[in-house]
Image (cartoon, rainbow, N blue to C red; front, side, top):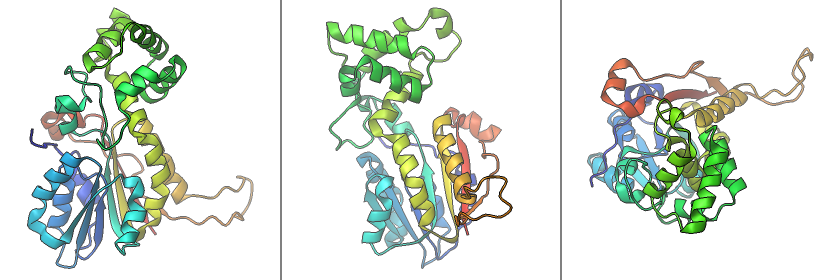
Amino acid sequence: MAFEHMSVLLEETVNGLAIRPDGIYVDATLGGGGHAYQVCSRLGSAGRLIGIDQDAAAIEAASRRLECFGEKVTIIRSNYCDMKQRLYSMGVEKVDGIVLDLGVSSYQLDTADRGFSYRMDSPLDMRMDQRQQTTAKDIVNTYSETELYRVIRDYGEDKFAKNIAKHIVMEREKKPIETTGQLNEIIRRAIPMKFQKTGGHPSKRTFQAIRIELNRELEVLRESLDDMIEMLNPGGRICIITFHSLEDRIVKSSFRKNENPCVCPSHFPVCVCGNVSKGRVITRKPILPGEVELEENSRSKSAKLRIFERC
Protein backbone atom coordinates (compact mmCIF):
# COMPACT_ATOMS: atom_id res chain seq x y z
CA MET A 1 0.00 0.00 0.00
CA ALA A 2 1.34 3.45 -0.94
CA PHE A 3 2.06 5.84 1.93
CA GLU A 4 -0.71 8.41 1.65
CA HIS A 5 -1.27 11.10 4.24
CA MET A 6 -3.09 14.38 3.77
CA SER A 7 -1.11 16.99 5.70
CA VAL A 8 -3.32 18.88 8.13
CA LEU A 9 -3.17 22.70 8.45
CA LEU A 10 -0.52 22.66 5.72
CA GLU A 11 -0.58 26.30 4.61
CA GLU A 12 -1.05 27.63 8.14
CA THR A 13 1.92 25.62 9.44
CA VAL A 14 4.32 26.52 6.63
CA ASN A 15 3.32 30.21 6.83
CA GLY A 16 3.69 30.02 10.60
CA LEU A 17 7.36 29.05 10.26
CA ALA A 18 8.12 32.46 8.64
CA ILE A 19 10.70 30.70 6.45
CA ARG A 20 14.07 32.27 5.68
CA PRO A 21 15.34 31.06 2.28
CA ASP A 22 18.81 30.29 3.70
CA GLY A 23 17.56 28.74 6.95
CA ILE A 24 17.80 25.23 8.41
CA TYR A 25 14.44 23.59 9.12
CA VAL A 26 13.49 20.32 10.80
CA ASP A 27 10.34 18.34 10.09
CA ALA A 28 10.52 16.16 13.18
CA THR A 29 7.52 13.97 12.23
CA LEU A 30 8.23 13.67 8.52
CA GLY A 31 5.43 11.28 7.53
CA GLY A 32 4.87 11.34 3.78
CA GLY A 33 6.75 14.64 3.46
CA GLY A 34 3.75 16.94 2.90
CA HIS A 35 4.87 19.78 5.19
CA ALA A 36 8.52 19.17 4.28
CA TYR A 37 7.81 19.55 0.54
CA GLN A 38 6.24 22.96 1.05
CA VAL A 39 9.10 24.07 3.29
CA CYS A 40 11.69 22.95 0.70
CA SER A 41 9.78 24.81 -2.03
CA ARG A 42 10.44 28.06 -0.15
CA LEU A 43 14.14 27.48 0.50
CA GLY A 44 16.92 29.06 -1.53
CA SER A 45 20.16 27.38 -2.63
CA ALA A 46 21.68 27.70 0.87
CA GLY A 47 18.57 26.44 2.69
CA ARG A 48 18.36 23.01 4.25
CA LEU A 49 15.70 20.62 5.54
CA ILE A 50 16.26 17.75 7.95
CA GLY A 51 13.44 15.21 8.14
CA ILE A 52 13.02 12.81 11.07
CA ASP A 53 10.64 9.86 11.35
CA GLN A 54 10.73 6.48 13.09
CA ASP A 55 8.46 4.72 10.58
CA ALA A 56 10.30 2.93 7.74
CA ALA A 57 7.33 3.31 5.35
CA ALA A 58 7.26 7.07 6.00
CA ILE A 59 11.01 7.37 5.37
CA GLU A 60 10.67 5.56 2.06
CA ALA A 61 7.70 7.64 0.91
CA ALA A 62 9.20 10.98 1.97
CA SER A 63 12.55 10.12 0.34
CA ARG A 64 10.78 9.67 -3.00
CA ARG A 65 8.67 12.79 -2.57
CA LEU A 66 11.61 15.03 -1.64
CA GLU A 67 14.11 13.52 -4.09
CA CYS A 68 13.77 16.53 -6.43
CA PHE A 69 15.34 18.82 -3.80
CA GLY A 70 18.59 16.87 -3.85
CA GLU A 71 21.23 17.73 -1.26
CA LYS A 72 19.02 20.29 0.48
CA VAL A 73 17.33 17.37 2.23
CA THR A 74 18.71 15.00 4.88
CA ILE A 75 16.44 12.25 6.22
CA ILE A 76 17.05 10.43 9.52
CA ARG A 77 15.20 7.41 10.89
CA SER A 78 14.79 8.24 14.55
CA ASN A 79 12.37 9.50 17.20
CA TYR A 80 12.29 13.29 17.50
CA CYS A 81 13.28 12.97 21.17
CA ASP A 82 16.81 12.23 19.87
CA MET A 83 16.81 15.30 17.60
CA LYS A 84 19.37 17.33 19.56
CA GLN A 85 21.86 14.47 19.71
CA ARG A 86 21.37 13.47 16.04
CA LEU A 87 21.69 17.05 14.76
CA TYR A 88 24.78 17.71 16.91
CA SER A 89 26.42 14.65 15.35
CA MET A 90 25.83 16.30 11.93
CA GLY A 91 27.39 19.56 13.12
CA VAL A 92 24.03 21.34 13.45
CA GLU A 93 23.56 23.11 16.80
CA LYS A 94 20.87 25.65 15.91
CA VAL A 95 17.95 25.66 13.46
CA ASP A 96 15.48 28.26 12.17
CA GLY A 97 12.29 26.24 12.46
CA ILE A 98 10.80 22.96 13.64
CA VAL A 99 7.52 21.26 12.65
CA LEU A 100 5.79 18.59 14.75
CA ASP A 101 2.64 16.97 13.35
CA LEU A 102 1.72 14.64 16.19
CA GLY A 103 -0.45 11.55 16.32
CA VAL A 104 -0.97 8.68 13.92
CA SER A 105 -0.82 9.05 10.12
CA SER A 106 -3.59 8.12 7.69
CA TYR A 107 -1.26 5.46 6.25
CA GLN A 108 -0.77 3.85 9.67
CA LEU A 109 -4.53 3.88 10.32
CA ASP A 110 -5.41 2.52 6.89
CA THR A 111 -2.77 -0.25 6.75
CA ALA A 112 -4.50 -3.21 8.36
CA ASP A 113 -1.43 -5.14 9.56
CA ARG A 114 -0.12 -2.13 11.50
CA GLY A 115 -2.96 -2.73 13.99
CA PHE A 116 -3.77 0.92 14.73
CA SER A 117 -7.38 0.94 13.59
CA TYR A 118 -10.49 -0.32 15.36
CA ARG A 119 -12.26 -0.40 11.97
CA MET A 120 -10.33 -3.44 10.66
CA ASP A 121 -9.59 -6.83 12.20
CA SER A 122 -5.82 -7.23 12.37
CA PRO A 123 -3.01 -8.21 14.76
CA LEU A 124 -2.74 -5.91 17.80
CA ASP A 125 0.45 -4.02 16.95
CA MET A 126 0.34 -0.16 17.00
CA ARG A 127 4.13 0.31 16.89
CA MET A 128 5.17 3.55 15.23
CA ASP A 129 8.69 2.16 15.04
CA GLN A 130 8.56 -1.49 14.02
CA ARG A 131 12.08 -2.06 15.35
CA GLN A 132 10.51 -1.88 18.82
CA GLN A 133 9.90 -5.27 20.44
CA THR A 134 6.84 -4.50 22.59
CA THR A 135 3.45 -4.30 20.84
CA ALA A 136 -0.10 -3.38 21.83
CA LYS A 137 -0.75 -7.10 22.30
CA ASP A 138 1.81 -7.16 25.11
CA ILE A 139 0.13 -4.27 26.91
CA VAL A 140 -3.35 -5.78 26.59
CA ASN A 141 -2.22 -9.22 27.77
CA THR A 142 0.36 -8.42 30.47
CA TYR A 143 -0.62 -5.17 32.17
CA SER A 144 -2.47 -5.61 35.46
CA GLU A 145 -6.08 -4.50 35.71
CA THR A 146 -4.94 -1.43 37.69
CA GLU A 147 -2.36 -0.51 35.03
CA LEU A 148 -4.88 -0.94 32.21
CA TYR A 149 -7.36 1.21 34.11
CA ARG A 150 -4.72 3.95 34.54
CA VAL A 151 -3.78 3.92 30.85
CA ILE A 152 -7.37 4.00 29.57
CA ARG A 153 -8.43 6.62 32.14
CA ASP A 154 -5.41 8.93 31.73
CA TYR A 155 -4.68 8.62 28.00
CA GLY A 156 -8.15 7.76 26.68
CA GLU A 157 -10.10 9.89 29.15
CA ASP A 158 -12.80 7.21 29.00
CA LYS A 159 -15.34 7.26 31.83
CA PHE A 160 -15.79 3.49 31.43
CA ALA A 161 -12.05 2.82 31.87
CA LYS A 162 -12.53 0.72 35.01
CA ASN A 163 -15.08 -1.56 33.36
CA ILE A 164 -13.08 -1.88 30.13
CA ALA A 165 -9.95 -2.88 32.09
CA LYS A 166 -11.98 -5.42 34.09
CA HIS A 167 -13.45 -6.98 30.90
CA ILE A 168 -10.03 -7.18 29.22
CA VAL A 169 -8.59 -9.09 32.19
CA MET A 170 -11.62 -11.43 32.36
CA GLU A 171 -11.40 -12.26 28.65
CA ARG A 172 -7.65 -12.81 28.49
CA GLU A 173 -7.95 -15.42 31.27
CA LYS A 174 -9.95 -17.52 28.77
CA LYS A 175 -7.56 -16.95 25.84
CA PRO A 176 -4.96 -14.35 24.75
CA ILE A 177 -6.29 -11.19 23.07
CA GLU A 178 -4.39 -11.05 19.78
CA THR A 179 -6.42 -8.96 17.32
CA THR A 180 -8.07 -5.56 17.10
CA GLY A 181 -11.37 -7.36 16.41
CA GLN A 182 -11.20 -9.28 19.69
CA LEU A 183 -10.39 -6.11 21.64
CA ASN A 184 -13.23 -4.28 19.88
CA GLU A 185 -15.76 -6.87 21.00
CA ILE A 186 -14.53 -6.76 24.60
CA ILE A 187 -14.82 -2.96 24.71
CA ARG A 188 -18.33 -3.10 23.22
CA ARG A 189 -19.45 -5.45 25.98
CA ALA A 190 -17.94 -3.16 28.64
CA ILE A 191 -19.79 0.01 27.57
CA PRO A 192 -23.58 0.36 28.06
CA MET A 193 -25.47 0.31 24.75
CA LYS A 194 -27.13 3.68 25.29
CA PHE A 195 -23.69 5.37 25.39
CA GLN A 196 -22.50 3.51 22.28
CA LYS A 197 -25.25 5.14 20.25
CA THR A 198 -24.20 8.70 21.05
CA GLY A 199 -20.51 8.73 21.97
CA GLY A 200 -18.80 7.86 18.69
CA HIS A 201 -17.04 4.53 18.16
CA PRO A 202 -16.79 2.77 21.57
CA SER A 203 -13.17 1.66 20.94
CA LYS A 204 -11.76 5.04 19.90
CA ARG A 205 -10.58 6.17 23.33
CA THR A 206 -9.13 2.80 24.43
CA PHE A 207 -7.22 2.34 21.17
CA GLN A 208 -5.84 5.87 21.49
CA ALA A 209 -4.79 5.19 25.08
CA ILE A 210 -2.97 1.94 24.28
CA ARG A 211 -1.20 3.55 21.31
CA ILE A 212 -0.04 6.51 23.43
CA GLU A 213 1.23 4.20 26.19
CA LEU A 214 3.02 1.87 23.77
CA ASN A 215 4.81 4.64 21.86
CA ARG A 216 5.39 6.85 24.96
CA GLU A 217 3.92 9.72 22.98
CA LEU A 218 3.18 12.14 25.82
CA GLU A 219 6.43 11.45 27.70
CA VAL A 220 8.47 12.03 24.54
CA LEU A 221 6.64 15.29 23.82
CA ARG A 222 6.95 16.57 27.39
CA GLU A 223 10.65 15.70 27.60
CA SER A 224 11.58 17.15 24.19
CA LEU A 225 9.89 20.57 24.01
CA ASP A 226 12.39 22.59 26.06
CA ASP A 227 15.33 21.17 24.08
CA MET A 228 13.65 21.98 20.77
CA ILE A 229 12.94 25.58 21.81
CA GLU A 230 16.55 25.85 23.02
CA MET A 231 17.79 24.75 19.56
CA LEU A 232 16.03 27.59 17.74
CA ASN A 233 17.97 30.58 16.44
CA PRO A 234 16.65 34.04 17.45
CA GLY A 235 13.46 34.57 15.44
CA GLY A 236 13.19 30.83 14.76
CA ARG A 237 9.80 29.21 15.24
CA ILE A 238 8.37 25.87 16.30
CA CYS A 239 4.96 24.87 14.90
CA ILE A 240 3.15 21.99 16.63
CA ILE A 241 -0.06 20.30 15.46
CA THR A 242 -1.87 18.28 18.12
CA PHE A 243 -4.91 16.02 17.80
CA HIS A 244 -6.19 15.59 21.33
CA SER A 245 -6.46 17.59 24.53
CA LEU A 246 -3.63 15.79 26.35
CA GLU A 247 -1.02 16.76 23.73
CA ASP A 248 -2.43 20.27 23.37
CA ARG A 249 -2.28 20.85 27.13
CA ILE A 250 1.41 19.86 27.22
CA VAL A 251 2.28 22.16 24.29
CA LYS A 252 0.26 25.10 25.64
CA SER A 253 1.83 24.76 29.09
CA SER A 254 5.38 24.45 27.73
CA PHE A 255 5.04 27.46 25.44
CA ARG A 256 3.62 29.55 28.28
CA LYS A 257 6.43 28.49 30.67
CA ASN A 258 9.12 29.30 28.08
CA GLU A 259 7.56 32.71 27.45
CA ASN A 260 7.22 33.54 31.14
CA PRO A 261 9.48 31.31 33.27
CA CYS A 262 9.42 33.58 36.34
CA VAL A 263 8.64 31.64 39.53
CA CYS A 264 8.65 34.61 41.92
CA PRO A 265 5.60 35.03 44.18
CA SER A 266 3.02 37.36 42.64
CA HIS A 267 3.43 39.96 45.43
CA PHE A 268 7.14 40.54 44.61
CA PRO A 269 7.54 43.99 43.01
CA VAL A 270 10.35 42.79 40.71
CA CYS A 271 11.59 39.41 39.44
CA VAL A 272 14.48 38.03 41.48
CA CYS A 273 14.46 34.37 40.33
CA GLY A 274 16.67 35.12 37.33
CA ASN A 275 14.67 33.01 34.87
CA VAL A 276 14.76 34.63 31.44
CA SER A 277 12.08 34.39 28.74
CA LYS A 278 13.02 32.21 25.75
CA GLY A 279 10.57 33.90 23.37
CA ARG A 280 6.90 34.54 22.76
CA VAL A 281 3.78 32.57 22.00
CA ILE A 282 2.53 33.58 18.53
CA THR A 283 -0.83 31.81 18.86
CA ARG A 284 -2.76 33.01 21.92
CA LYS A 285 -5.51 30.70 20.72
CA PRO A 286 -4.71 27.64 18.58
CA ILE A 287 -5.21 27.82 14.80
CA LEU A 288 -7.97 25.42 13.70
CA PRO A 289 -8.78 23.95 10.26
CA GLY A 290 -11.13 25.99 8.08
CA GLU A 291 -14.42 24.78 6.62
CA VAL A 292 -12.88 23.69 3.31
CA GLU A 293 -10.23 21.53 5.00
CA LEU A 294 -12.80 20.00 7.34
CA GLU A 295 -14.90 18.99 4.32
CA GLU A 296 -11.93 17.59 2.41
CA ASN A 297 -10.26 15.78 5.33
CA SER A 298 -12.46 14.56 8.19
CA ARG A 299 -9.37 13.56 10.19
CA SER A 300 -8.44 17.24 10.56
CA LYS A 301 -11.42 18.02 12.81
CA SER A 302 -9.55 17.74 16.11
CA ALA A 303 -6.31 19.39 14.88
CA LYS A 304 -4.88 22.44 16.67
CA LEU A 305 -1.78 24.40 15.65
CA ARG A 306 0.30 26.35 18.18
CA ILE A 307 3.39 28.44 17.32
CA PHE A 308 6.25 29.73 19.47
CA GLU A 309 8.99 32.15 18.39
CA ARG A 310 12.46 32.26 19.98
CA CYS A 311 13.84 35.61 21.07
